[in-house]
Length: 182
Image (cartoon, rainbow, N blue to C red; front, side, top):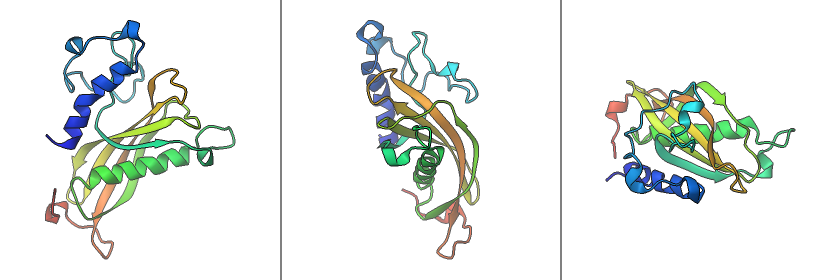
Protein backbone atom coordinates (compact mmCIF):
# COMPACT_ATOMS: atom_id res chain seq x y z
CA UNK A 1 0.00 0.00 0.00
CA UNK A 2 1.48 3.42 -0.92
CA UNK A 3 2.44 5.61 2.03
CA UNK A 4 -0.14 8.26 1.08
CA UNK A 5 -2.97 5.70 1.05
CA UNK A 6 -1.85 4.25 4.37
CA UNK A 7 -1.76 7.68 6.00
CA UNK A 8 -5.14 8.64 4.53
CA UNK A 9 -6.66 5.49 6.02
CA UNK A 10 -5.53 6.70 9.47
CA UNK A 11 -7.07 10.18 9.15
CA UNK A 12 -10.58 9.14 10.32
CA UNK A 13 -9.02 7.63 13.45
CA UNK A 14 -6.92 10.73 14.12
CA UNK A 15 -9.88 13.06 13.62
CA UNK A 16 -12.21 10.97 15.80
CA UNK A 17 -9.68 11.15 18.65
CA UNK A 18 -9.74 14.97 18.46
CA UNK A 19 -13.51 15.09 19.07
CA UNK A 20 -15.11 15.31 22.49
CA UNK A 21 -16.24 11.86 23.65
CA UNK A 22 -19.92 12.84 23.44
CA UNK A 23 -19.62 13.53 19.70
CA UNK A 24 -17.38 10.59 18.73
CA UNK A 25 -18.69 8.01 16.32
CA UNK A 26 -17.46 4.47 16.23
CA UNK A 27 -15.17 3.48 13.39
CA UNK A 28 -17.85 1.13 12.07
CA UNK A 29 -20.22 4.08 11.60
CA UNK A 30 -17.60 6.20 9.82
CA UNK A 31 -17.62 5.95 6.01
CA UNK A 32 -14.53 4.51 4.39
CA UNK A 33 -11.88 7.09 3.43
CA UNK A 34 -12.59 8.54 0.02
CA UNK A 35 -16.29 7.65 0.07
CA UNK A 36 -17.34 11.15 1.14
CA UNK A 37 -17.72 13.57 -1.76
CA UNK A 38 -14.91 16.09 -2.03
CA UNK A 39 -15.96 19.42 -0.56
CA UNK A 40 -16.21 22.25 -3.08
CA UNK A 41 -13.25 24.59 -2.59
CA UNK A 42 -15.49 27.66 -2.49
CA UNK A 43 -17.59 26.55 0.49
CA UNK A 44 -16.26 26.46 4.03
CA UNK A 45 -19.45 24.85 5.35
CA UNK A 46 -18.96 21.75 3.23
CA UNK A 47 -15.96 20.67 5.28
CA UNK A 48 -18.16 19.58 8.20
CA UNK A 49 -19.63 16.14 8.74
CA UNK A 50 -23.32 15.71 9.73
CA UNK A 51 -22.37 15.94 13.43
CA UNK A 52 -20.62 19.30 12.72
CA UNK A 53 -17.06 18.02 13.17
CA UNK A 54 -14.34 18.61 10.57
CA UNK A 55 -14.16 16.14 7.73
CA UNK A 56 -10.68 14.74 7.10
CA UNK A 57 -8.47 16.77 4.77
CA UNK A 58 -8.17 15.64 1.17
CA UNK A 59 -4.86 14.56 -0.28
CA UNK A 60 -1.56 13.17 0.83
CA UNK A 61 0.04 14.51 4.03
CA UNK A 62 3.04 16.52 2.90
CA UNK A 63 4.35 18.85 5.63
CA UNK A 64 3.63 19.37 9.32
CA UNK A 65 5.15 22.32 11.18
CA UNK A 66 4.60 24.29 14.38
CA UNK A 67 4.35 28.00 13.66
CA UNK A 68 6.85 30.14 15.57
CA UNK A 69 7.09 33.82 16.65
CA UNK A 70 9.52 34.52 13.76
CA UNK A 71 6.59 33.79 11.37
CA UNK A 72 4.32 36.59 12.69
CA UNK A 73 3.13 39.80 11.09
CA UNK A 74 2.43 43.17 12.76
CA UNK A 75 -0.98 41.88 13.93
CA UNK A 76 0.61 39.03 15.89
CA UNK A 77 -0.81 36.31 13.64
CA UNK A 78 1.18 34.24 11.18
CA UNK A 79 2.36 36.20 8.13
CA UNK A 80 0.68 35.01 4.92
CA UNK A 81 4.07 34.83 3.20
CA UNK A 82 5.22 32.20 5.71
CA UNK A 83 2.19 30.08 4.84
CA UNK A 84 2.80 30.62 1.10
CA UNK A 85 6.36 29.39 1.57
CA UNK A 86 5.08 26.16 3.16
CA UNK A 87 2.52 25.78 0.34
CA UNK A 88 5.33 26.11 -2.21
CA UNK A 89 7.39 23.42 -0.47
CA UNK A 90 4.40 21.07 -0.18
CA UNK A 91 3.55 21.51 -3.87
CA UNK A 92 7.16 20.72 -4.83
CA UNK A 93 7.06 17.53 -2.75
CA UNK A 94 3.85 16.45 -4.50
CA UNK A 95 5.22 17.34 -7.97
CA UNK A 96 8.32 15.27 -7.28
CA UNK A 97 6.13 12.21 -6.84
CA UNK A 98 5.76 12.41 -10.64
CA UNK A 99 9.17 13.81 -11.57
CA UNK A 100 12.31 13.02 -9.59
CA UNK A 101 14.28 15.90 -11.06
CA UNK A 102 14.20 19.59 -10.26
CA UNK A 103 10.87 21.44 -10.26
CA UNK A 104 10.18 25.16 -10.06
CA UNK A 105 7.04 27.11 -9.22
CA UNK A 106 5.51 29.02 -12.12
CA UNK A 107 2.12 29.97 -10.66
CA UNK A 108 0.04 30.07 -7.50
CA UNK A 109 -3.65 30.50 -8.27
CA UNK A 110 -6.73 30.79 -6.12
CA UNK A 111 -4.91 31.28 -2.83
CA UNK A 112 -7.57 31.72 -0.15
CA UNK A 113 -6.84 32.53 3.49
CA UNK A 114 -9.96 31.35 5.36
CA UNK A 115 -8.83 31.82 8.98
CA UNK A 116 -5.83 33.33 10.78
CA UNK A 117 -3.08 31.09 12.14
CA UNK A 118 -1.50 31.80 15.53
CA UNK A 119 1.93 31.23 17.05
CA UNK A 120 2.18 27.66 18.28
CA UNK A 121 -0.52 26.31 15.96
CA UNK A 122 0.42 23.07 14.23
CA UNK A 123 0.14 23.56 10.47
CA UNK A 124 -0.53 20.48 8.31
CA UNK A 125 -0.39 20.66 4.52
CA UNK A 126 -2.13 18.08 2.32
CA UNK A 127 -1.55 17.84 -1.42
CA UNK A 128 -3.45 16.41 -4.36
CA UNK A 129 -2.26 16.27 -7.97
CA UNK A 130 -4.93 17.95 -10.10
CA UNK A 131 -3.36 17.43 -13.51
CA UNK A 132 -0.13 16.51 -15.24
CA UNK A 133 0.89 18.24 -18.46
CA UNK A 134 3.86 17.72 -20.75
CA UNK A 135 6.22 19.69 -18.50
CA UNK A 136 4.03 20.74 -15.58
CA UNK A 137 2.15 19.39 -12.59
CA UNK A 138 -0.80 21.28 -11.09
CA UNK A 139 -1.19 20.66 -7.36
CA UNK A 140 -3.99 21.55 -4.93
CA UNK A 141 -2.74 22.29 -1.41
CA UNK A 142 -5.05 22.29 1.64
CA UNK A 143 -3.61 23.86 4.78
CA UNK A 144 -5.07 22.86 8.13
CA UNK A 145 -4.20 24.17 11.59
CA UNK A 146 -4.59 22.64 15.02
CA UNK A 147 -4.87 25.19 17.83
CA UNK A 148 -1.93 25.03 20.23
CA UNK A 149 -4.32 24.72 23.18
CA UNK A 150 -6.51 22.10 21.51
CA UNK A 151 -9.49 24.48 21.37
CA UNK A 152 -11.63 24.31 18.25
CA UNK A 153 -10.03 21.20 16.79
CA UNK A 154 -8.58 21.09 13.28
CA UNK A 155 -9.59 23.82 10.84
CA UNK A 156 -8.85 24.39 7.16
CA UNK A 157 -7.13 27.78 7.12
CA UNK A 158 -5.76 28.18 3.59
CA UNK A 159 -5.90 26.53 0.18
CA UNK A 160 -4.10 27.13 -3.11
CA UNK A 161 -3.49 25.74 -6.58
CA UNK A 162 0.18 25.63 -7.56
CA UNK A 163 1.69 24.89 -10.98
CA UNK A 164 5.16 23.36 -10.91
CA UNK A 165 7.32 22.86 -14.02
CA UNK A 166 9.96 20.16 -14.42
CA UNK A 167 13.32 21.58 -15.49
CA UNK A 168 16.64 20.10 -16.56
CA UNK A 169 20.12 21.00 -15.27
CA UNK A 170 20.08 24.14 -17.47
CA UNK A 171 16.73 25.25 -15.98
CA UNK A 172 14.90 24.59 -19.25
CA UNK A 173 11.45 22.98 -19.12
CA UNK A 174 11.68 19.25 -19.72
CA UNK A 175 9.10 16.59 -20.47
CA UNK A 176 7.84 14.80 -17.39
CA UNK A 177 7.49 11.54 -19.31
CA UNK A 178 11.29 11.40 -19.72
CA UNK A 179 11.80 11.31 -15.95
CA UNK A 180 12.40 8.22 -13.89
CA UNK A 181 9.42 7.69 -11.56
CA UNK A 182 9.31 6.03 -8.21
